[in-house]
Amino acid sequence: MSAGRILVVDDARQIRRVLRAALSAENYEVHDARDGEEALSALGDQRFDLVLLDMNMPGMGGLETCRAIRRGSEAAIIMLTVRDSEQDKVAALDAGADDYVTKPFSTQELLARIRAALRRVPSGAETASENIHLDRVQINFSTRRLIQHGKEVRLTPKEFDLLQYLTANPNVPIPHRRLLHAVWGPDYGDEVEYLRVFINRLRKKIESDPANPRYLLTEAWVGYRFQLPDRSPGLSGEV
Image 1: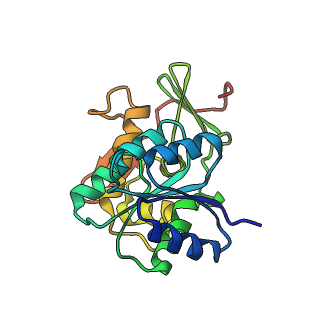
Image 2: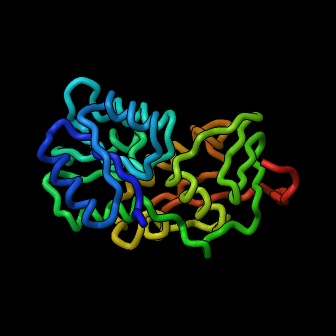
């Protein structure tokens, strides 16, 4: 049984070949694409659990490809790049990536990152309610759907996991490290920029005024807090 379906997107044939061999040995089903256009075509035809995406491709670059993937796919995305500045990391995360790996990397490091990208929040972190209502936003955690103004809003799996963990622990500050451990895994803890980008993305999807949030609040020097509305969220209605 396959451990998951992975699409490798890189203009370098040798890198595609090496990654295919390494991932196939771990029981992943691997497909590859030479550029962004080919990757989007593959994603239009098939479902993938994860995309390994080179950031520095000619033509349609990695960031543009990542944004295009995010418009139509919930696949996890790990960006691969030779650059390691915080600005590059934030650019990749802003484009919709779930993680960022700098070349050269070891096979074990990449495999750990893939497992982290594919992991889901443990069932013990479930919310107390299936539905939460925030103004005109409804969140259903059993179906993993968010409805805003009557229309479904797409959340990436990691965005939903982060929101789920925060709402399961309402009204109390949750430290950065605890959030990273819970959502990305025990190998994470210092990647505060990940949380900053993901929280900003979530605010744009659930807050009426993302610049002045009511629900996803920053706790300076500590972490983040989900402020539960005064009224009981209840279970009324279906999302």
